[in-house]
Image (tube, rainbow, N blue to C red; front, top):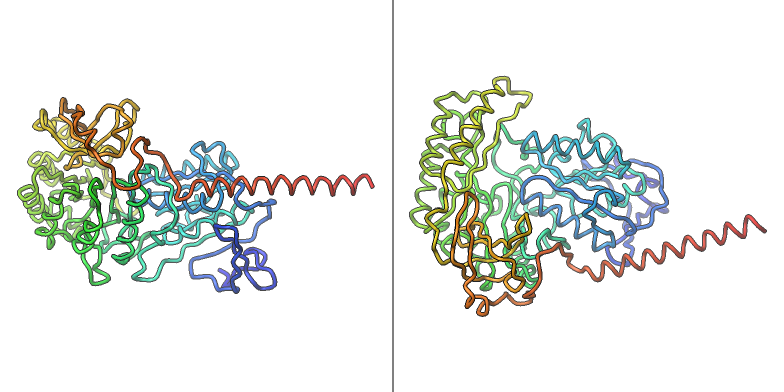
Length: 530
């Protein structure tokens, strides 16, 4: 790897690097050394004009990855690029990958092949690209590392010019990740996903995310609270806190997750709800008393995702999970006792190498005991170091647990209840609006534009395996108030921090390109016919 970016490859003129800013200016930077892990390879210039291309972004995986994809879209849109949903019309694809499960990687690799077959420019992002930059499928392709998403504009523009760029260096400790105040295009303009830390403290044998995200690196609490204030002012009514493990927040900077949560709650207005993301059992045990108080707060969903993965202590040891089943049960029992109608979601891996029938029965017994309303069932997938995995056993156990999960209806006891719900989305089939009650249960309500983004009251008229049906209490609609600066009639759509400015910038650049082509044609005409 070269120590410095070559002048021809990095756009250096006279030893000085010219970097285009998201606005109209050009920043002049001194020639710099490339951080370890970053690289620009020289390629051909394709007659590139900044800001005059369409970009398609596809994201796999967790809410943290989703947030990264939204940030990349926002940065590019602010620079004049058009973010499109139709991949066939795009000039460049950004493929934002997930490395937790083998099937996700397979889908990612298939998307790379498709893009190459169609002749699209490709930029790889996410955990697969970060953890496996020398992989077979990533060869010769540009990569924007998960710690470098704030520099996605550089990578995209170099790639559009035919160069291969790889930015893989990591942020310094204590900085969190990319700046939280960057522009963003949300999938749903009413919901903001805020990463509170990157990396984790575990070394789980089934997960490769640690190799990509690295050690725990928490954002400063003040930066997170500032982001909360910012998005609420933009009209967001639901905030999701995300990371690889929210419970570990602050352990690298003399802070705690509960301290952060109380600071966020202080700035949340009425009508805005907070959802706390996944936490592993060891890091929530010492905070149970405070977490119960927080989950009981009227502006916090009584919901927590705590993955157990297996109920057998022997299997948990093999997985290098730093807790036992008794500790997990203590957490669930404590929260169910102290937080009315709390929803505990969990994960199970079926057929993990070395898992015996007795081990798996312990998992079945646990799920039968708690009847989790949200249960993420995953098959163990073969990694090179695992030689004991038996596919037939994995499928059989997955089927048994799935049948158990489908055998009970978790919401029957809520039939006839009157509940407060926050309306934030549209159902997949388009027939209903989607709301959530205090327990973060999914409640389907009639499509009425005046209730979108509002906290309303409904009567539960029916329940299913994964949802409740709500009839709107009319008095609550007229009384419902939105947080400040929120429109009362909008539907959730993707939004940029400054869409009008981006559109104007794109228009100006397209006009400039047209004028440039006309001048070029006129010069050629005079030269040929003089």
